[in-house]
Length: 120
Image 1: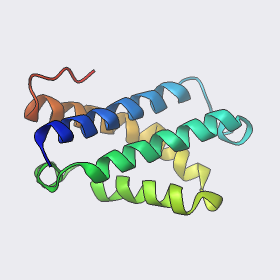
Image 2: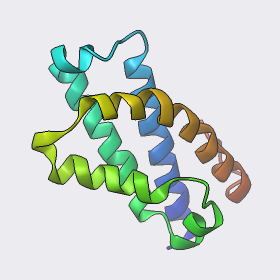
Image 3: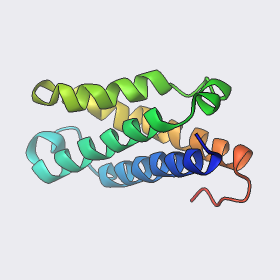
């Protein structure tokens, strides 16, 4: 994988993660059950994060082993293939706990490996 493609994939991960975090701002867990558009949007954004993670080179994933690449990719697979049995309590925990900590980690990778890029 070329560095440009890694940078693009990492940027996709950051953008989708930020958008998901913004969408849940001011929301509560029950909103996933009552707001179908919110639910669909959040699931799709997490699918994008996972798909982009799966396309980040092994070199980057190995270098930044503290990022839970396998879990991120597995979540994408679970959402795609287990679409009919998604546990929205787990999804909410990922959105509220894991994504806010993932974003700075991805920003740091972009800053370290692609210093000319603007992580925002």
